[in-house]
Structures are given as structure tokens and as C-alpha cells.
Image (tube, rainbow, N blue to C red):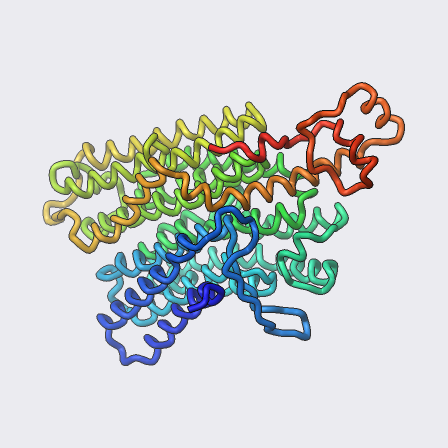
Length: 546
């Protein structure tokens, strides 16, 4: 198999598995086994992305480009860089876990459920690898359908309401994004190629409205405050696998969109409105953490924690420095690991107690020691205990935030304190709280299937916690290139704002500064003088490592 076909295979195989199950006679056991086999095969095939990825390059790798609709210059183009490769690997890892956690929990329409899981995996991978904007939009919209069905068909009592709310919110964001996609096509030379569009030059007015069109779609998906109200309902009503896939992978589509489209294509608008996004991120951190603190429903607590955790991700992205963006990408992976594990564990205790109320799940310390131990580890990881995965991501985001704004960093630090508070209080009630369960409810410890489901996530918690460098290495070149491009835009805007009267005065007062680099593309003589101008992102910021 050639390297360039690897990503296409990751999309095709789950769809092939879905077709195979669709034509099979109805047999629940075989449906589960075939789905598990295909998801494990996809994960195994995705591993070369880790080993063969060139960490020194910011260019797209494993690229396949085939004409799809030549009349409109639409191509089937896929590839990964340091921003997307870890998200693809996370998706292929989470999919088999969703199958395993549904093994006993889903006992009706198993065939259709497994088809939905496979189709959703393929569409999510497609979003992360698409290099054509039209192809990206197709995958973006297509992944809604299987999740809508998973919530609406196999969810809880209010599943129809939750599914419709999820669908309508997301479609509301997709409509302006479609207009922006078409506007970019006609303005950018009638091409949907993302790399070409990222290198284009657009007026500030055009960038501003394209930014907000994309922002609405991405902010709803994250979800950012105040677009988050669909998330608790979707999580609470979704089956365990739906919650895991939603939290671990689907929420990352929004933050990935900011990194792939908002910053490169609309850099002026991104910087102009960065303060708005930072404020909304800080509100999400505090509000999500506070709402988690007051919950009595275990699943809703974890759902609101996602609002706070994803607030750290958007905060890291829009501080526009290396540490913040690296921390944001790593925190996307960390959130997928820890919150996915917490939803798995909530599903396990629900299968035993048939209740999500924390009061009905108390006093577990004597009856389920393995469950309590793993719940404690993933809870500690969720609030960023040193030695666990989330500590590294949060630390980088906090460093980047404090470099940008001490006030924003202080507010975000308050969110960290609240996260510690609600996680420890949840543990206290689960482990040492009063047992209010009925006498006929017997809680047994985790079985081998459940332990096997959580084991890969447990390994990643400590791997990233103690040795994050391999993960940071894979994103570093792409992040450095993105920060450099944003820096060039800042330099250009600064120079364009200088008039003929102020420029000689500045050049006279300020000697040439050796750290100034990557100014705008002006003539060589003028560029030598421009090196005296202050730069908002220095080379030290671009190249500083963890």
C-alpha cells in the first residue's frame, strides 16, 4: 500500500464495513464483531501516520489529489499536517471503544446502530483530512446524520428533543458557512483548494464577514458560550457511545476549524476580533465549571465540564503564540482522552444502577475498587494533576495566555480552581458518599471487557503526562508556521498604519533591532529600514520550546 492511499483507506474501510453489515442477515452478534473488526483494522492502518510523519515539515503529508468535479474545480484532496494528524489518530482510537461500550448496552436495532458508528467514523476522519473546501463541507454536514440518529433512536426519554436541538443548532451554523464557502470560491479564483485559499489576499471587510460566518459554525460545534445549550441535552440523552464520540472527537471539529480556516484565511479578522473570542472563552471556562459544580446528574456534570475544558482550547488558539496554540492542540487530544474515559465510566455505573444521580451512585469504595481507582485517575487527569496528560496542555495554554494578558490568565486560573473543586466533590460523593440505592440494586466491579476498553486511554494519560515531547514534536512545525504567518500579518498591518510623517521619526529614534524578522514583502531597501519597527510576535516566541 502506497503512503498516499493511507488516508483514503481510513475513510473507505468504515464505509465498506457499513455496507457489508447492511447486506448481512440480521444477526446482532455478528454485527458487533464485524464492526469491532473494522474499527480495529482502521486503527491499525492509521498507526503509520504516527511513525512515518515527518516532524520537521509543516507541509501536508500523505496527500492524495484526484479530480472530482472538474467543471467547478472540485477535487478529492486529502492530507494531514501537524494540526490534524493527532486528531485522526484520536478518532481511530475512540471508534473501537464506542463499539465495546455498546456491546451489552445496545440491544435493539443493533445492525443499524453499528452502521451509524462506522459511517460517523468515516465522516469525522474525512473532516480532519479534507484539503478541498467543498469536500470538507460535505464531510462536515454528513457527520451530523449518524449522530442525529444515534441520539434520536437509541437515546433516553427526551431523545427526540435532544436530537432535534442538536441538529437545528448545527444546521443554523452551517448555512452562513455555506455562503462563506461559495464567497471564497468566487473571490479566491474559483478554487476550493484550502491551501490556495489560505495564501490569498482578501480585503478586511470581506475577511470580517467570512470570519463571522465561519465563527458561528465553529462556535456552535465547540460549543462556545453562549451557543452551548444544546450540549448538555445531547450528552444526557445520547447512549454512552454517542456521548464518547461527541465529547472525544466531534467537539474538536469546531476548534480544528478555527485553526484550519479562521486563522490562515481570515488573519486580519481573527486578530481584530480575538479579544471577543478570548472573553467568550473565559466566560465558558468559568460558567461551564460553575454549572458542573452544582450538578446532581453525573452525566450532566461531565457534559458541563466539556464546556469549560473547550474554553481553554479556544483561549489558547486566540492568544496567537506558540505556547498557546500548541497547548490548545494538545488539550484537544487530552480532552478527548479524559472526558471520553469519564463518559465511559458514567455509562458503566449507569448500566449497574440505572440512575445518573450522584446520590444513587454513592458509597462505591468498598464494592467496586477497580472502578473507583480508575475513576479517580481520570478525574485527576481531567483537572490537570501533574503527571497526567491534561497538566501539560493546561500549562502551555496558561503560559501562552499570561504572555498575552495577565488579566485573562488570572481569570483562566480561576477556572482551573473550579475544575479541581467540582471533580474532587464528585469523587467525594461517589466514593465516600451515602449509599441511597435500593436494596435490590447490586453494583459489581468492572469486567475484563470494560477494563480493556479503558486501558488505552489510561496508558495515554500517563504517556502524555510524563513524556509529551513526541506529541508536541508532531505539531511543532505546523504551529510555528501558523504563528509565523500570523506574525507577518501583524507586521503588515503595523507598517500599513504608518504614514510618511511618523515613519522617519520612528526610524530616527529606534536603532535597527536584530530580533525583527519576517516583515511584509516590500522592496529590499525599504525592508532594511522596516526592521527597526517593533514586532508583536518575536522570533523567540515562535521558536521557544516547552
